Image 1: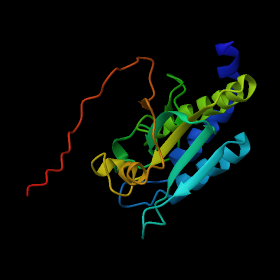
Image 2 (image 1 turned 180 degrees about the horizontal axis):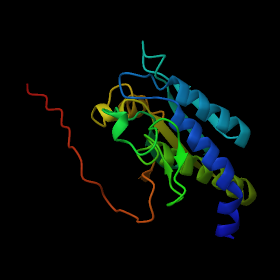
Image 3 (image 1 turned 30 degrees about the vertical axis):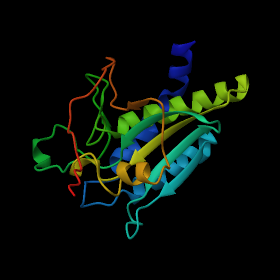
Image 4 (image 1 turned 45 degrees about the vertical axis):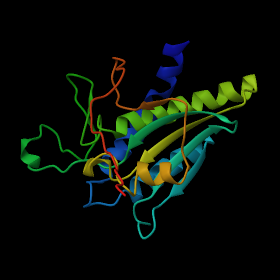
Amino acid sequence: MTSKLSSSFTSSMTSFLCDLICIRSVCRIDPERFVAQRILVECQSLKLKCDLVSAPNEEHRPNVIVTAGNGPSKFLFVGHMDTVNVEDETQWSFPPFAGTIDDKTQRLIGRGSCDNKGGIVCALYALYLLQQVIDEKNWNVSIQLACVVDEESGACSSIGVRHLLDRKLISGSGAIYVYPGINVTIGHRGLLRLEINVK
């Protein structure tokens, strides 16, 4: 069943990912607005609930929250729409903002294909399938995908994931950060940010 389902979505997912790669969203250079709008269009075609949420004075950089189900029990997927810059495009075998499939490897190549637009595509289609199961089984759950802005600036931006968490717009008893790949990784090295108030 899994191979039938995945093969039926291959064309749609590939086309969607190519579109996202072609939209430049270099952190703090190209606003993520156009990536968010393309995700919104895909959500509409999949009949998924989708909201664009911007921090104050950051309307050109909206976060995207996609939700399957509407119950109190929650699980969360998190991905980011921004990419790092391309220093020298001549060093690339393929144009970095074209979303090209390499004939030899059959891999889709382009800036953001792995970090992190590919993960967003996979999570969005997983949410689509989960929505069908939720409806069929009448489960009282809610599963969210947060596509956030400004992750490449340091992973906990006040206009991206931090903005959504602080306003309680996303939550979950568990979460998956949506880096694509075939290996499951438990835990993730990164930063620990502390705020210490001394009185």
